[in-house]
Length: 174
Image (cartoon, rainbow, N blue to C red; front, side, top):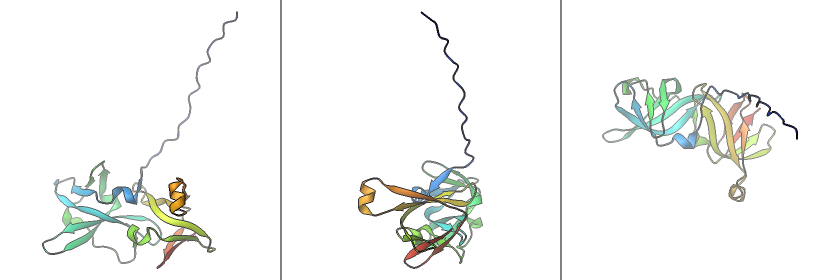
């Protein structure tokens, strides 16, 4: 009878992720509060991206007396995203007007996504973004209703490419 010594387990190296990924669908409807004053700033109604594909920030719907006002909460002004709300390092007076040259998640979702060569990649379901770095990380695509039932959604990693949002489609350049 031989006794074997148990080998010490080797430590497994783990990759440390320095940013948190979010999806557009995940944060829609979150209330936003000022971290300094604890005042309510508005509710997230959409997400704003630059024409280069950078995440500019959240579009806040603010209820006014007779109408709704929309303002931009820049990504760099977000202190933390909690499970049920978002804290910002600005007050309502420091929110910006919406930029003219941008596109929103609402303009992009459920559009046909094509490659630059014209190949159909799928329908855009969601966008993964990183607020820490201010970029789009990936696009979640669907091949249709029956593929969704089978649980087959694809993710296309952003390759530092420009995004062109057209009337009926999105073209990934890269």
